[in-house]
Image 1 (tube, one colour):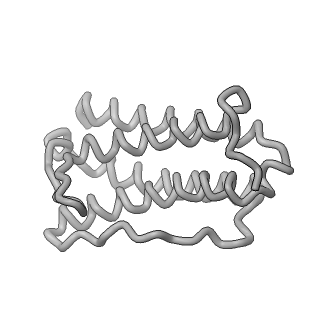
Image 2 (spheres, rainbow, N blue to C red):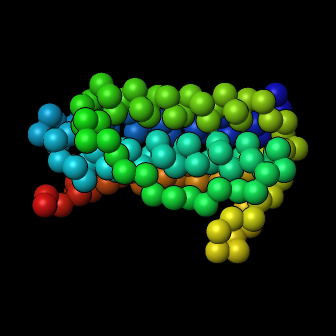
Length: 146
């Protein structure tokens, strides 16, 4: 692996570890709030979508649009949410490990006419983790109670 790919992999690992720390600090009451579980669910869904875009692009297939996926109702415990986040990031990282440094500059055309490189897609995953963690931070204010 090249230096740039190693840096992206490091950023993906660090951002998910930071998000997991925020998950660990949530109370059981926090986890019973759908908006909290939904934030964590969406972080994993975004990983799945990023991996799918890379796979489809590399195979020369048409890219699937990013469709909303509802969180399963049972996915509201710390253990299940942690497993979900570990699973989705693990599969994304496994995919990224098979890329070459040069692949990070490959571009894909996304919905809405946006064009992004693999590198920016992966850095978006890092930023989504940070945004999710910030939303769960008691200092920044958790999602409002419904």
